[in-house]
Image (cartoon, rainbow over all chains, first blue to last red; front, side, top):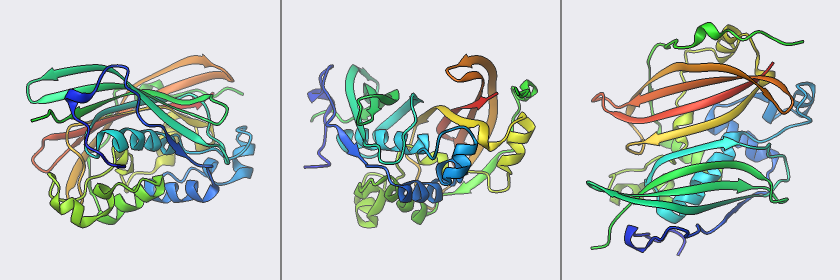
Length: 144
Length: 151
């Protein structure tokens, strides 16, 4: 089941998230993301502009890849569980790239009222180069 | 031809601005990501959920823009333009998911500006943070972004 419930008790350090494969990235997705996010920087839309800016052509919004990573986390942990998500944009995502988002449990902690799981998260392209690296914290329900 | 970044902006706070989250905007954003989670898209699932309505995906706060502000003006004030900037880092801390129909107040400020050499030449890093509160003045989320300026 795609949106299964994950309980804090069942999670172990070292557990891996199911990989989320996105793409190949098409121009239309960058255009939709521009409209949805309000980021209309022509560097993501206009190849001529991007070349003139010295970027070698259009590339994806970093926030699109971060959104993919967020989805990988919520597909596993559930919508509304994310307490922290922080990333560094390590490399550009280009048109036709396939972005695979991954994650791994690195720590668990239980405080008053919240069971938190820390994840290492990242996204890589089809050449296994990391395009996004970061960390996430999710709050999970306890069993019973 | 290197450009000069205005480090005088460090610590500058921008006027707080309200944003009312639109239901359709949450759906549009989720669809643009290709994320079909029903908590973002299906009003009935939202209504039956613990939140009582749709919620926004974790990175949705990035859409909370000040419609009265001119981005090109900020870049000009910084001493650069849109062709030279890249997104370096981004972080969200979320205390409660954002929800449709609610009005949030965003308070942006420039936290830091520093320069260091990058792979393709000298770069400036502009760190901005926005605190997002709800109509009871409770903090809902913070976002922190690092913009890289190619000097």
